[in-house]
Amino acid sequence: MKFDLETVLFFSLAVMAIGSAIMMITRKSPITSALYLILNFFTVSGLYLLLKAQFIAIIQVLVYMGAIMVLFLFVIMLLNLQDEKILKEKFTYRKITAVLLSIFLFCLLSFTIYFGFSGKFTAMSDKAVEIGTAEFLGSELFTNFSFPFELASFLLLAAIVGAVVLAKKKFE
Amino acid sequence: MLESYIPIIIILIISVLFAVVNVNLSSLLGPSRPNKEKLSTYESGIEPVGTAHERFSVKFYMVAVLFILFDIEVVFLYPWAVSFIGLDQLKMMYSFISVSVFIIILLVGYIYVIRKGALNWD
Image (cartoon, rainbow over all chains, first blue to last red; front, side, top):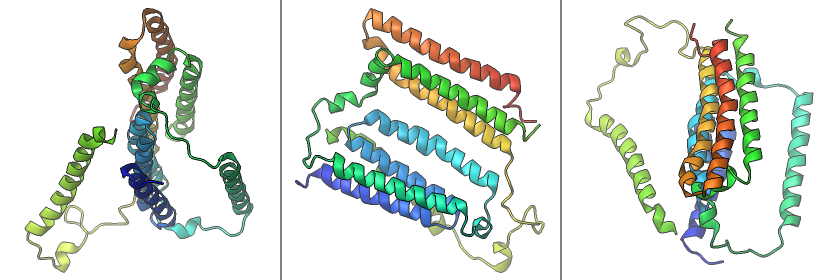
């Protein structure tokens, strides 16, 4: 392994990402957790840039750090979580299910990493820089992959209708 | 490769410095003589009742969620706007039609939102 700038950047971003994720789940105040989640999104966006996925990196900043975080903060204010003690629950079915699912996810991830990794690192192709741009993405998405693109619009439509139906009942 | 990000890094550094310096500069330069009366919470000169943490109305959430959904619609249009001019005639037409269908489907959602009055504040 050679220690060039990209390696140093990768490890510092990875440490920051893991650190902010741990800080996010251990904070008491939900607002502080949400702010650490912003930091986590930012470092992940940096990792996307290192993978030469420029468009996804900027979308991560625009949509996740900008819009989704606003939504998170609104939900926190909507629920008005003041005291964490109210939310603490005893040993319930939900907790058992959560633990089992986490163990399952951990096994799945570790198996995938262990068996899916062939043991040697392959260098990123020279075309990777071109593929990550918005221009290349656009020329492929709207011609060769137009069907999944149209499906995305139906997904968004369903989300719009769902949001209106769920929230509208409350303030009528 | 990484050299092309230098302007972005410079902007990031300047924006972080601007925020940190300005916040700290005001507390450094401004006079600070706190006393008990000054530090107490008040609202229009009256002692506050209850906490400041009020529950927000679901109306704020409604606006935020609809903003995100239409924001994602716009995100799909960025690569289209950039790539459109570089395509040949046939692909240009094809991508125009596919984006038109995309926008029309979401227009149905927009009309639904307006007709339901989901963005009305009252």
